[in-house]
Length: 114
Length: 115
View 1: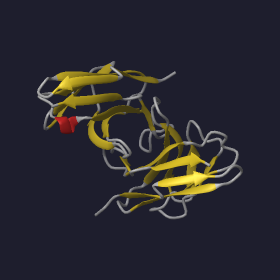
View 2 (view 1 turned 90 degrees about the vertical axis):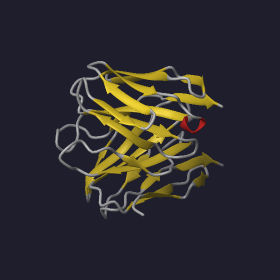
View 3 (view 1 turned 135 degrees about the vertical axis):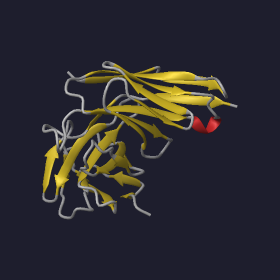
View 4 (view 1 turned 180 degrees about the horizontal axis):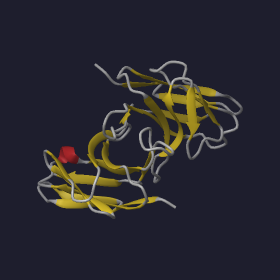
């Protein structure tokens, strides 16, 4: 079945460590997105990519990095510079059709600090 | 600053008791308003897209409407399986419209339907 796969489901980070969250889609979507969700807050945009080898910062990009080497993959690295990384991370994708196509989401990765 | 506000924050209904959730927005250049359903520990599931004032969309017990300032998600005769957090989001720019891409989300309405 087509969809968006995020892995791992749970991830633990030690102080000073970089960790990478995986996001893969087999929907042939053009654009991919990373959001962060904290309790009591709306989803906030970290980074997005509309085309391979290009990506743009969202509202809260500091302490994060991404790459888009393949259309189907958009990994997110949470660096040691991100001082409050504990959150639920959601990856999304969408196609660019004639109308404003909706974003579809994976089932998230929950990141915690050891 | 562009903003999306959802109300109420939480709503508890009896099975079969109809109600509405509100999403008000203060943005310019709206290119679409989206409703999602999110279950605990899961990603948001797409429900509806609304593009212009006066537009309505329906799916089973759910009906979404849009005005120039707000959107409503009407739930008719809800069942316990409708319990979830309902998220509203707006899109401003994008690939075909220029400007930054991505959605601006409200904080959601946590809906509980009691049997």
